[in-house]
Image (cartoon, rainbow, N blue to C red; front, side, top):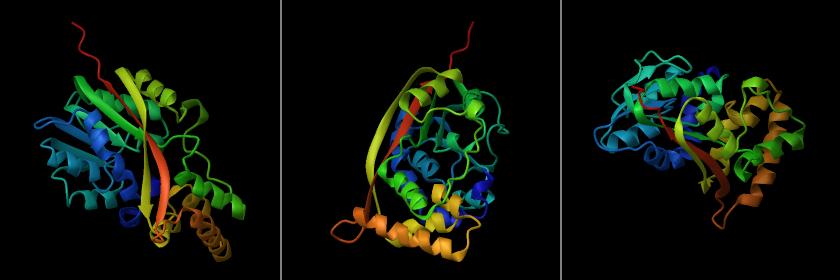
Length: 261
């Protein structure tokens, strides 16, 4: 998770609004209800955790990036500095565990999901979200910018032997392989609305596929990427001049196995 080091403020100004869209559905899949003990893993700025608190849950949040932890503590009572795959929490401590766009940012996704299962009470719920592949138009925009200026995407941090397909079947298989039961996965689609300058904050600060590809590039290459971005983004401008970017996410959930007696 070191890729987020020092980027919490930029994340809060850009991608946090995109990632927030799935929070209500994620918590619903996890069985959010007043009084449940819920763990939000990779909380970021605390969006999902704060919504769970508002829903009456007793919430613990964790994140591997100190800057994220600092921002999340402004909206969530208990936030720990910790990261997957080994969290300093006891077995079966939570009725529900959620991870919003997290398991695609660890080197061993299967082990990470197994850790979420370890922390869940028998019969409790685990829910995760992942960006799909092939990429929706929002994510494909960054790929098109890279192609326009001849940039090579950064390699995945996940070794091929540990990776999983970013499809409903692939994500469901990841959860089933970690021991979850009654696993289901479906696609959530929406249009993310922002503006040209705000949406550039992410890559300008090294975030996302384009941001990683731009890391270490000279000023001329960065300027060329910005120019290509503005040209390609023009196709997504609405009548008010705002960006309207279609996107989608995979939401998967399952039930932790019951204790065998």
